[in-house]
Image (cartoon, rainbow, N blue to C red; front, side, top):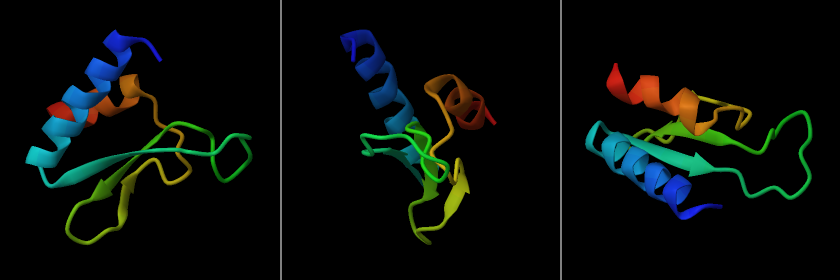
Length: 68
């Protein structure tokens, strides 16, 4: 992962945390139907998945959610 990509990820994490959400990154090594190796947005208080239930979100997909 490039440092600029990691920086972007951290900025999104911070912005989501301020809105009451968490950004989860997939840790799977082999991509399969239930885990596509991307990101998931989770409610920080309830723990339920808000977007990306199969870790299908990329950082580009997360940015519009933050701006909503």
